[in-house]
Length: 263
Length: 323
View 1 (cartoon, rainbow over the protein chains, first blue to last red):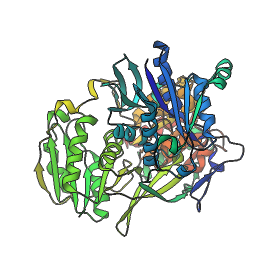
View 2 (spheres, rainbow over the protein chains, first blue to last red):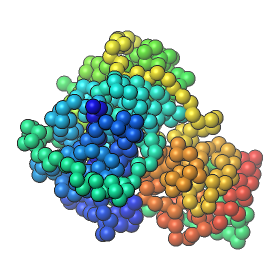
View 3 (cartoon, each protein chain N blue to C red):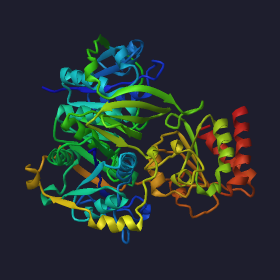
View 4 (cartoon, each protein chain N blue to C red):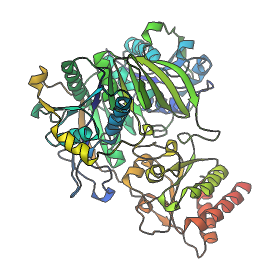
């Protein structure tokens, strides 16, 4: 039966107000904002949505969600299961603390190999925390399978995928034989929200707790060093455009833009 | 011994040299060079001499019908071959449709890593220090890369372009891509956007948010954009509400834009939205709420109801344009 694998990670809530976004420059980590819970990375839930749309047409398809991260990442897997995915794999190993994108890709590829046959791997085009956008295609490279990035639609006929890939001025239709990797973009559409019944069902779905020992690999080496993390000074000198009427303010702004050679 | 900087230049659809090429050349020269510029595509040979005007010592041009339009599986083997031949210390791409897809795949092939979407590059000893926005632009992260070559993609218009002067040796190479290497095949390309300027290329972007009150609010914004020769963007909130096409969405889960001027109308300035304009230096905001957080990031703040202001502003812009 068709097997679709989705990658999902957990991120600090991107709706955190800018004023509450703080980093620990020494530890090079984000300090969680008070009262803000981490959430599934949105491009990843869009990936699960893409997988579910395939399953809607192919009810015997099995969707496995793999997540690499600490204990709290289980909530993200559970969210994906409540959306309708079938089973989860949680790779949770202290040796992976601080793993970079390339180390994470190695771990994901090892997990895919352990799971056995698959048809399509669906990943977000990037995470919404580090925004790097490399993991999906790196896993494809490691597994030596085709990859199509930045998809807004994925159709699967059992032996090949037909993908609409977002371009600046439209889209292109790309075909690839399976197994393959596809990364998805927001143009695919909103991910479905778990309904109460599905949340109850998800409680019974299996989440495999795997460690590096289960995968039979040592912690992969990082290829990058994070040298610094800081909040940039984005404050600008703001001029409030004065005027008694819309007309006056409009003339004043147009004048400023003309003087700055912007219009 | 690895040396120098290899950049992947780009051309526009009609074969002219794209602006990112001069920006990459400028960055590569500041990193110490010597610069080799690779130019891949179909009908790009004519742009090769121009690509060499920005400080490159050598331009490697691969002009082949198989490279018509970016297609990852065709470009990857050519890029890998050039990278191995040149054996540079640093490889730079633009954060473009090509760079976003090709750079991570090339990094994987070469056993190295790539810092994506960088806004500043410098050398620390012989290490590339690559600075990039993270957390939707709320933070900046600086990376070094533990493997060779050290790779980065550079945000469009973020770095100073090199001035045109001089010329480079131009070397032609064949693509030598066999059909069986192309596993993911482009079977069709569909243009979706009507005429007008692309959001990513626009020098002026006029964006609307929930403060517009409804989809009809975009009509005057479209008129303003037309008068300014710009494009229209939208916040996630209004795209979610179906007021404007999702293709115009600016922000963390939409597009990153880099116009010279960004006019935000009825946009509050959620971090989600600011992520899409974090490199924009000139923001003018119109909002009737004087506490709107977007004002903090704006060079000009207009506290006024957009319904009154925008029609008046269109007339004033027309006057400036006519003078």
